Image (cartoon, rainbow, N blue to C red; front, side, top):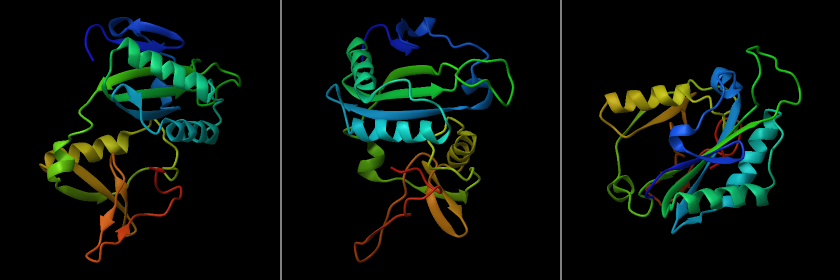
Length: 208
């Protein structure tokens, strides 16, 4: 990615320095929103239909109408990739319930806020994947609906800060003596007999 960076804000591609959302946006005030992230390799979206399906499920779970069809989301993502000349990295999508005076209950029919941006990242050759990393375990303090990809990520931020303070790369979250998932990763264990062990799908984890 080179040159000026552009961000999608409610239907417009604007220079990053000019991208704004209102103070009264419920995503900012309440974390009342959903996000999704799709990898980009060679300028192309990776497994994007599955990511957009998860976005749709999460939006439905918190009763936000999906503002776009799969085709429209894909077109917007591809336009952003092209405009930012992104070869390798990710596209981030955030959809919030919209803008209203601060109150726990908002009026029905708010227009959702949509923000999208790209980030250049090394995807093909990650030192962490090639060499491995150390992790710590922490109590899982998150809410009960972890299957919803909510923008409310304070517990994960605190876990990541604890991992950094311990000099490791990640924290695995533990509930009732069992690993749920990593602070920002899915957790898989390979046993000595080469079986792969992970948590079954449920509200306790985000479907990865």
